[in-house]
Amino acid sequence: MSDIAAVRHLRPANAQLPLAWYFDPEIFALEKKLVLEAGPNYVGHELMVPNPGDYRTLAQLDHSKMLVRNEAGVELLSNVCRHRQSIMLEGSGHADSIVCPLHRWTYDLRGELLGAPHFGETPCLGLASAPLTSWQGLLFAGPRDPRRELAALTVAADFDFSGYVLDRVLIEDHPVNWKIFLELYLELYHVEPYHPGLSNYADLRDFRIEYGENWSVQIMGAKAGLAAPGTPAYRSWQQACLGRLEGRTPKQGALWMTYYPEVMLEWYPNVLVVSSIVPRGPGLTRNVVEFYYPEEIALFEREFVQAQQAAYLETAAEDGELCTRVARGRRALYEQGQDDAGPYQSPLEDTLLHFHEWLRARLGRPAAA
Image (tube, rainbow, N blue to C red; front, side, top):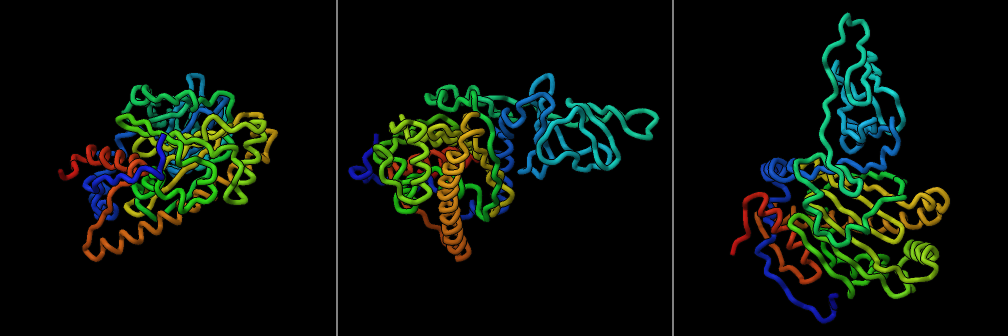
């Protein structure tokens, strides 16, 4: 546990990233090659396609790929027709085959071409697929092995999706570099001054941090009795939360985990949230948020779902404002040819330091001694 009233340790700033790393297209290209494309490349959860024949196209990739459940399991297929490259399906649903609306080329659920109208012989052109690795139902298409990399995670059992269902997927674009977005998620230093709702739910004087080579997780306590909500949205959420717990304080307030570089996992009582970021350029980041609940809550307790999402989105909006403020300040200095970085506050920014060191190692640019 950490008492922020007692701890005032400042760590040196030498691991901080140069401001150019947030704006330079050449740095972004290097990150894309060495970090982002190297994985783990989260593409979705098995619960997105729970039944054979289910499909869901990936909106964050402009529907160019899709998850499909066939007799062999869940596969990631291209959603671009092999004839004239049209997007075929869009959204989610159930199908026996995949049919392109342009010329009616038809594929089976493994991506094999079944028929091409007016061709005497069916061309040997199937849809591209990528192998997937599953951890707790989360699906990854990258070369890294999440089962090995997350094996030491002591709170893995809390990220058990058994009995849960997908309720909603929310996609938002933020006009900031992807690292700024991730940094605000990682550090706790801003929570008390900027998040009146969240800071009266999670206990910043009762938390611990676990680290792996490629991840960190912050295990947060809950404010005793959840008795003093900081905003109306959090009042509704905390009342709904206590109602499900029959008045008991939850065993923990939250788990905030980051699997570098793009996946964020969150646990709250009877809630699991998966967020993933898709960097679209040096100054544009797409965030994909998936909300999962136990099936009985998702189907029959919509007040709980609505209250939780309202509180969550209130905090997300506050973080979005902060991201924009940080991006504006850094850009101003960058355009003036200046560079600046203050020290890390420990323990509230320890995960931020861990991420910066991780990124520098991947790019082969260690911090100065």
